[in-house]
Length: 318
Image (cartoon, rainbow, N blue to C red; front, side, top):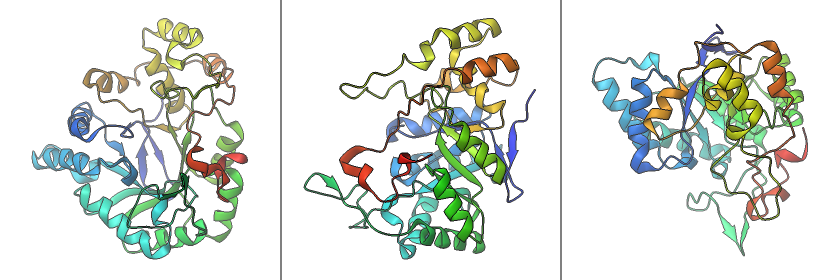
């Protein structure tokens, strides 16, 4: 069976299976986090933008208070939102997440994307005339402020999300602390082999978000999407062979290749089921078959409100 964790450049270990919390409503996410903790999850992927960190923090506080869980058993990640890219805004934004999560340090802090927005009263998506306002803050300068969080002992590792190869190369040429992780959309419909190989060559761990291909995300008008991954006959056939669900196969697809993944669910039975992925093994041929489903179908495109015109928009390049 494959390892359950990946060792980062910092020497710290990140569990390969985590709970995703994007679009997990505040009213239910605390219970979901508690169920996940009871089911053995130790990696939790959070973000200021998700607006539910206080409830997740309440779950941590409750379980830590019961005395059956130690802080060093948890691996908690959060993300710096685009509105706080100005260097002077980085630490206050970090401390706000830290306070809401009710912790005294984070294990991983990611830059949510390379694109900066102006900080206008802390608005998440500042707009004018129906278009997103953009800032010209250089993500390299943002990164330097994030490095200071490591040096102050507030976070153990720092990384990025939604960065392409050229942006990673530029960051690597300027950093003091190399990004430990790049969190990107990855699944059999979007395997991104060049990016995966590049990160591997630089020692940058990958975290795959949307491992099921965003089944709940509505298809934009006129977009011809492939059938949902969870209903794909090839995925289903492999799942039936192993006596597993399609979701478990899609999670195993990443974990077996040393890529962390953060499936999101708020359904207790599915949270538990999604963790049952260490008692079977995909063959090399099955891995190759799943990779063969690649059709470069990106579901999280960040192209709303004119965002694709941002000078640091990451999806116009590899």
